[in-house]
Length: 307
Image 1 (cartoon, rainbow, N blue to C red):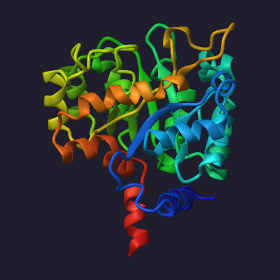
Image 2 (image 1 turned 135 degrees about the vertical axis):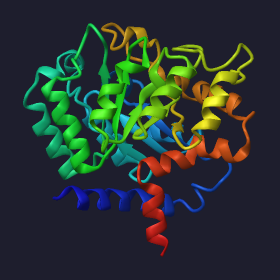
Image 3 (image 1 turned 30 degrees about the vertical axis):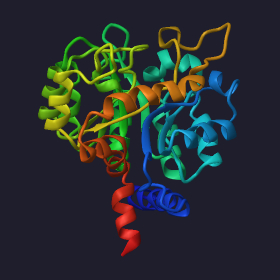
């Protein structure tokens, strides 16, 4: 199947799912969660049906899901095909999180997954200085080329102390639509703004900016810090919101216990709703819904379907 036809088919079932739920995208409180993990050690506690129920309870009408292994995202999509957008992760096994970029066969599997469906993107992919991979890693380059060929998002997590670490990649791959996980993690708003200004092909998600992860987004009362508000108002179409339901993220994939991140989904969305309520309604809707629909191609497909 060619990349263009794959894009059309995937957009069709996504839109069909939203249209099947009357008024879902327009109802008050509807949100898109663009950073959802459903990993093997989370499925031990929450099965797909229960995960979908919790998404519904939070008003999530679009959930971009990545998982370890990638098949878990596919299973969640099967439970809610009109709500879940599955992405293919290079972490095909838990151990692959640290070795994927040395696996020269990985791009072949990614190509097959994107061609056959239902995967709608690639990610989340971590680039961490001193750990790996290098920005010129050939496996990473082939994955980025696939994102360009299939015209699907590439969710990238860059763990660095400066925005310029990401800059060579987003400039080199201008035709790739990047979702920048956690808006750069530890980076302050001024650095995030510099990257967005330099690379119009990058959208930032604000997942894990809560008090239990990176922080730095709000004050102690949960109100948005002034620097962030300025950046959101400057780039109103370039930010999205996600929950990132991985608890104790510094202890990823613990050997002795399952991850209880989905038990905190409501708490994570309550945090986001608190700082969002102080923004103008039109900007708030863009951040929690419209930008994600556009980024994942659903807004265009819905418009075409209605004509």
